[in-house]
Length: 416
Ligand code: NAP
Image 1 (cartoon, protein in one colour):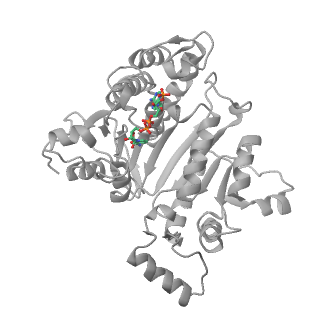
Image 2: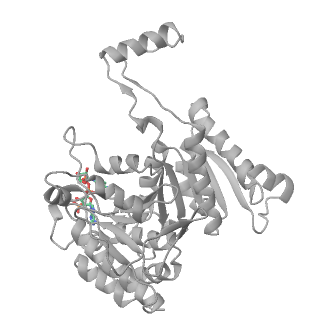
Image 3: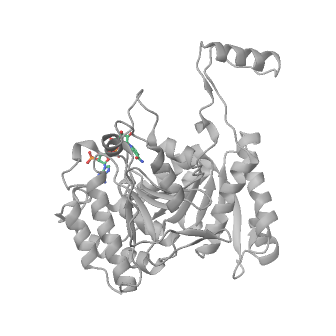
């Protein structure tokens, strides 16, 4: 495919899909979007660390060929005011894997969120947020070191689908009349109305990717989180379809919690993954009291939104939380915080969220050795207390370093 402004690097080779699996060449072309605000600072720092880790791990045999793609303010400058150029979408589809900085979204007007547009246009149906504790990161949670969970949040359905009817509008009156007169529903006059679609298709593809992740990464359990005791035909159905999918497609590797107790006296057999479910409210409590009981959590959009930020707080906050939005093959890895515009171009903020999203990206590509080098180096830098301002203000005796210096520190600790 030819592009107007995007230049595919000549020294790289494109990722392909064969037999439904990604094939990663040794010099893969990977897209990156700098993003707005602090995006350029954290992107520069993260790419340097990722390149250094790949170099250390594979001694030149492997190397990422980065390809810059444009979204947000930088895109508007290049494409004559277009914040969301169609060729960027085409390039992500062609390259399959991209790392993305944060993008500005105007509040209460202006253009549609670029992040939401990207997820919808590429049908990135799973938002994946690993939440784990790195030794030394400031946290208020006593048992933070027990947290090591990966949340799969459904990205396309639920109350987020945008099917809402404003109080007083003609559509609202029409729907209210139908609900009252045809369906026997009872609710207060002039209530705003929203629809919460949860489908077998949306549920099953999400739960399938969560289970596949658990299998590929040696995880011991998958939990379906829902509020199905109250919302029986949406959240309850999510739970039922999740179990149905597990039985249909993964019967050889999964056992239910009932089977674990009935047939194995609570002792998890080697090579088996337990699938269980928990109601959303107790899940929040359990995640604080006994986080070690949870490995992978699959849940709907709104539950997943709340749970991922609450859990991130246990291990140091969203400032270091990585994330990815995945379709069947496409992966867009992104910082979970925003553009923090007041710190733009000051080389000041913490690059960890984007950097650790890059670590997820390496794992997704199967370059686990390089990912491990960063995961091992990271706590050493924190232990030295050479950290960016946000961590420094929560630590006794820390030395505050800039974004680029923090990246240098990590690179200096990469050892095989
Ligand atoms: P924000 O950009 O996440 O910033 C809020 C605060 O979080 C900052 O003022 C800073 O706290 C802290 N922070 C964020 N990133 C940090 C980092 N890398 N290192 C250290 N501290 C960091 O949230 P916002 O101000 O609500 O949103 C700004 C813009 O970003 C909006 O346009 C919003 O729509 C957009 N946004 C984009 C994404 C995305 O692209 N995925 C996500 C969320 C928001 P202190 O002031 O305490 O230092």
